[in-house]
Image (tube, rainbow over the protein chains, first blue to last red):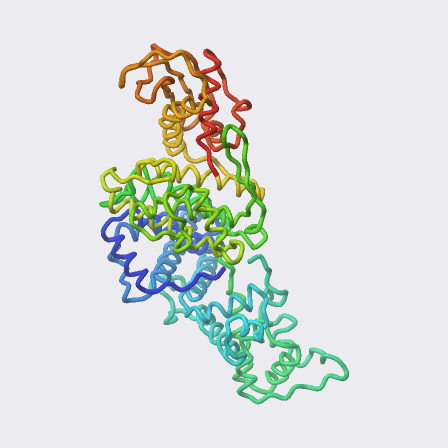
Length: 193
Length: 404
């Protein structure tokens, strides 16, 4: 079920409630974004327990520093996705380095390749999560729901031409995940390349 | 939700439909007339082509074109690679227990200025657990039949509905608390004239709906649970003076929120059973408060039942208010357990260990199922000793706490 877009007012109110120290707001924040955060973290680190820890750190970070999110800079969803990806890639590198230092298998090059790969995946996830909803909805229909572009157009109530445009534009945005230092990449994620 | 990407999506660039195959792919058939498209149309099809989401003739035309047009071939390769980066969000594995762990850890690092009151915490947790159960339900699950069960006049009663109907039931009855807190009534214009019982409200909602409830009932139910927890936190329940009318009785707000937490769990179990999912009991801390609420309600229920000839008219010694009276010791085992002394002769009497006439021991979750009307009082797995009449009265009184 694609997440409906929420008005930015929700983001603003949430930030204010967190800043006021309202525990009920923290619960609502978790209920809305925990699957997203946990899913992104798990994709990068590939381990349930570590993903749990990153989820905890992401929510704790915003709860402890509610002013680090500025609603005027963009949606809370993208901000959380960026923070999650950054923490997850960091964790992957730290644990990988520690394992190598203990004499674990593999080489530094293997680790770098793994981190680079995870960074690209994390950037891609971030791009999908932050692209305009009409583009994301079109991609989700065509890819996950296996709709061709005419069916996608019907589902979205747009012309065939518009559906083709959204699919192409969505993939063009997504393709920038391979570019290091892409303008869409959140700060800190491209560190591996 | 459960569809899997079509075959070509999983491939890397250069698979059998990819740009590397240009020119080598056979035509649709010997009679197929090649589609002739203008360059700007071919270009606009690149995204759909990369996703294998265009008609075979169009795909053919695009691939034909890629052999002649360098810029389009470059873009096609790039977009096809991008498809490999699309990943379904992994949300299925989220452990429902993680919520409490994450929130507790946050609140430890920065204590809240506006905490969720202890009496609303069970409701917050149970609503979140139920919502997590509903997360991946498809239409089949939402329409799965559920039988609501309760005790009425000491007889087992039931009512058939669906998973969505159960959520509608929770939405409308939680609405009693919402109205008491000054929030909107989810029944809107369909609200029957007051005072209304939970079942009146539920039937009114089911009647007023043009269609049987479906998955769309989830969002308003969840929004209301959040609004209740938020309002309870911000107002702290009007320092405990607010009461919630249930039609034929009323509860203080704090108890009403516990009652709603209890109902949320009980119906979550009904739903889980209907769709054959496992479902755990609440945390010990929350279970304890639910048992406590039932134990505190029992003396008044016993009194009510005596007045209506449903409980044995014990040879009654007059007990002055606040004085110790004949008591039953209710021992709840397991996580969230404890001991309660239930005064038997009058709600005004004080439970007393010295005047204990009977002892009942049972597991917390079993006691709650009894109080939910899911276990016949005679079959409740309870260790019993002492006055049999008193034990029977208390077990039947517990079952009579249940309602639709």
